[in-house]
Amino acid sequence: MEKIQFKAESKKLLDLMINSIYTNKEIFLRELLSNANDAVDKLHFKSLTDTKIKSDFSIKIEVDKENRKLKIIDSGIGMTRNELENNLGTIAKSGSYDFKEQNEKSENNIIGQFGVGFYSAFMVSKEVEVLTKSYEEDKAYLWKSKGTDGFTIEETTKENIGTTVILTLKEDTENENYSEFLEQYKIISLIKKYSDYLSYPIKMECEHHKPKEKEEGKEQEYETYKTIDTINSITPIWNKNKNELKQEEINDFYKEKFRDFQDPAKVIFYKTEGAATFSSILFIPSATPFNYYTKEFKKDLQLYSHGVLIMENCSDLLPDYFGFVKGMVDSKDLSLNISREILQKTHQLQIISKNLTKKVKNELLNWLKNDRNAYEEFFKNFGISLKYGVYQQYGMHKEDLKDLLIFKSSFEEKYVTLKEYLSRMKEDQKDIYYATGESYEKIKNMPQTEFIKDKGFEILYFINEVDEFAIKMLNEYEGKKFQNITSKEVDIESEEEKSKTKEEEKKHENMFKIMKEALKDKVLDVTISNKLKNSAVCLSTAGEISIEMEKVLNAIPNSQKVQSQKILEINKNHKIFKKLCDLEQNNKEKLKEYANILYTCAALMEGISPENPVNFLEEISNAISN
Image 1 (cartoon, helix red, strand yellow):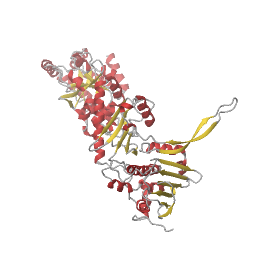
Image 2 (image 1 turned 180 degrees about the vertical axis):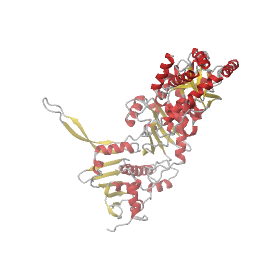
Image 3 (image 1 turned 30 degrees about the vertical axis):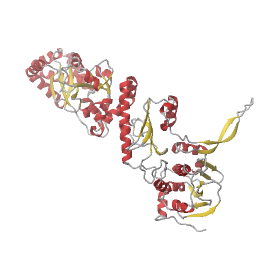
Image 4 (image 1 turned 135 degrees about the vertical axis):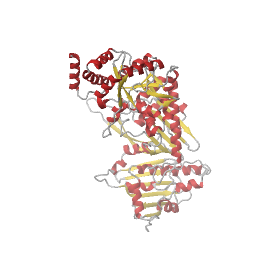
């Protein structure tokens, strides 16, 4: 029998395709099942106008462990000899693509368009046979190949039209276990993973076990029986009518597919037609995945084309700040390259991503508006992700995300939106005030909050490291600037109060100069405070870097150290101020000691530990004893 060479540039091309294009060997079953689905779909399309066609329109899988053979049998359109030679003899020749071109106006869903998926069979097979009979003629043919050395075609007999692909699996090696592809559990798992939503049933004889009637005093025995089971689900849940689905059914689907023990917090069904046609079902989890804020986390978004899994973790479907969303997206018109594993960043994918992003944002806004308690629970889990979205990419997405942000505040210590904060601002309030700290309790006890609260101004509480960075990127909200209450720029005094403060500062100019010199490079300045009511001192900052930002930035490994420009502020109404004035007149060296003590106390309130705790204790002891 004459051996025919592949009609490609060289045998090396086939070898490259087998060993390089597909990085995961298990993908072969997905490709062969997709081809079988195409063949059945073609015949089904023909049957709409040809009543003579009789078929059960299905795919079967048979396993012969003894001979290491795996068969994929379809009741589809079959192939003639010429089609066999042209479709399987020329790499990147696609019968499905030609069929689609010839029937461009039809709505048939032809998956395989590039003619290379079939050759993935050689990754696991030492020989591939294709037994086929076309619906157009009575003759049947057998195509055989062991890979790059070519193939043979011979006439044979076959009772029914359709195609049977017979794989003789390679022998196991130290590094590769090919025998697993003959195991029932493995085949079922691959069908469920990649081909669960093919449009025709995939059937297989499955072995089951059930307990026999237990005899007293003996161990439980089981009997084996076999049934022909349909393995795939066929109709994806996202293509079903939402109103016909029970919430329990949706929850069970989510928990099974995404290995979660809890029901989803929110479910989003979304379909669209037009520039990009797709169906989707999206889920927001009830709890934060254990690795969500780590480098190991992968977005749990699955991309399908006509029900065939293309990518298990498609990172391009939603931006990182919506990375918590899980789900499936199924599109009919995605452009794929020669391997279904590798998705090109096509215009269609960009449109899908844009539509999905807008949909998720609108759903979150509606959630915030209509179910506040549920949204607050969601925000506790994933709010940091939204804040990072505001900060990242130089604030590119800040306008899209700003109304999704909520923060606890001094107003009843509840979560508030920026819009709600704005609606409660006092007439004489110039800025939106916020405070940063390790916890809500520490922020509430900050001395800088005293005078601002006394004025009746609301303060937003920031306890996450990213909070202030995000707000700095946002800069303002509806014309109102954000102001850290520890900033020197806080403007809460009346003109009369400002005038008095300037007079006091000028009056005690020499005292502040002595204290500043004593503190050297620790502070930028020493001044009278406009924030304090009961406390003696506090630290404020000038410039863009606050004390909390300094801590965060300096905690980054191998980062260049930064330093905020600190200002020691003193309460002129506190008894310590009178003491300082006395020391300025009578004991300037003691004034310097007090300057260091007061600075360290103010720094401790900001969570900054003394450089030398022993010296600090000695300074306090000396101050008390003298």
